[in-house]
Image 1 (cartoon, rainbow, N blue to C red):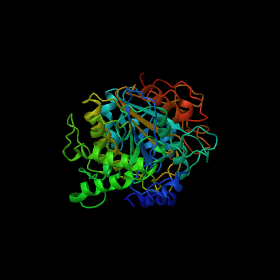
Image 2 (image 1 turned 45 degrees about the vertical axis):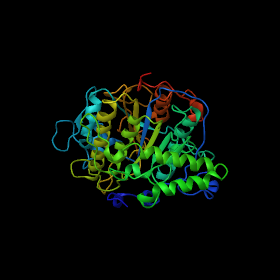
Image 3 (image 1 turned 180 degrees about the vertical axis):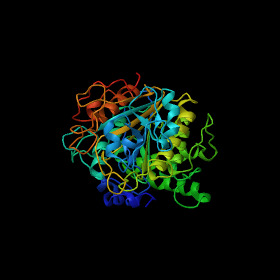
Image 4 (image 1 turned 120 degrees about the vertical axis):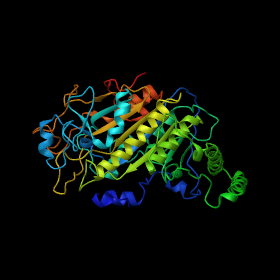
Amino acid sequence: MNQHDCHACEEYNQLSRRGFLKATGLATLAAGIPAWLPRVVFSQNFVGGRDVIIYVFLRGGADGLTMVTPYADPAYATLRPNIKLLPPGGGATSSLALSNSNMFGLAPGLAPLLEPYEAGQLAIIHAAGFMVASPSRSHFDAQRFIEVGKFNDPTIFTGWLGRHLADTGAVMPGQPVRAIGVANGLQQSLVSAPKSIPVPGLGASNSPNYSITGSSSTATTRLARLNTMYSATTDPVKTAAQTTSATITLLNGIGFPTYTPAGGAVYPTSSFGYAMKSAAALVKANIGVEALAIDKGGWDLHANLGPSAGGAMNTLLDDLARGMQAFHRDVLQNSNQNAVVVVMSEFGRRAAENGSLGVDHGYGNAMFLMGQRINGGQVYSRNVAGQVGWPGLGPGQLFQNLDLAATIDYRNVLSEVCQKLLQNGNLANVFPGFAQQPFIGVTNA
């Protein structure tokens, strides 16, 4: 349990303790396969020139009204008298000014993100979420619905990002791995991804060890014996074992312990910082990895939100922002590899603070997109009529009289990422049952 779990609801604590592992229809098959093997499917076609996607999920329901503060909405200060951030220039508890916006300010903990924002490579999408009549405020359900890409459909077990990768041929067909989940088990969003594997070590230290469990001095011998043993078995175990062996060899050749970031980038010495640094090394190594899923938890702050210096939310935001800033300097500004970072959470928080100086489960939230081909340097939002604007926090404007409304469906944002940056036109399979609407120009073709 991390230091913020004492502020969280019991459902979130239960999810945290079991590492957000998802139950899938492959459970029966998995029972007969060693735990160190990935689940692998294969695609046939080849499509090149795609961005590598770094999918960062803020688990626990990050508070978008703190991250990107609508200080110009007169209801904001009324709803949050004790945990509000002031307009830019108001002192230590003020938000940070964003160019091209007279409505929103950035939380102080996100100050490092001003750099990619001002460079035009960070876009903020506000009041986003799963646009349905009765959204879920359960961590478990909301995370699952977002990661599978369809609301409340128990027949879907595959993830939206996994289906995208299964629909598109490998950029480098001969390589053993296309997708990595920085977790103990593959995130739901990547389930069914071709040649995918969880690699928790990417977020474990500055010098992760990718040898199989046991002494490093005998790793080569043990890996060779495992290869010999599994070469005599049948599929799917044989192919999975061979792929895992090749992946271990490939990762050990990256040189993570000696990796030197470019552009003066300094990654935080945290799990998230290590994961982003490892992601940068993988992207720049150009070994065929097309997607990485990274989780950052701790956002379920029902008590003592702490939006300014020294507070829990501020600490989480600082770690997030410094990791993203380092990746921006290291990869987006100092390499020839295209990448896009997508940051989102399962839902936002209530518009009003509670009696414990926190905020309970809500609805509409903020998303972040960062990359070379992002139309950044602005905050995108819509009003309830679907026009450019802000849905508002005043009387009669809140969803169910409680929450910021979701007026941009997150699937519209991810659909545009898939279509324009990941070169996938089969959006009906990536987000089944969803009719994509033209978005307001988040990405460049």
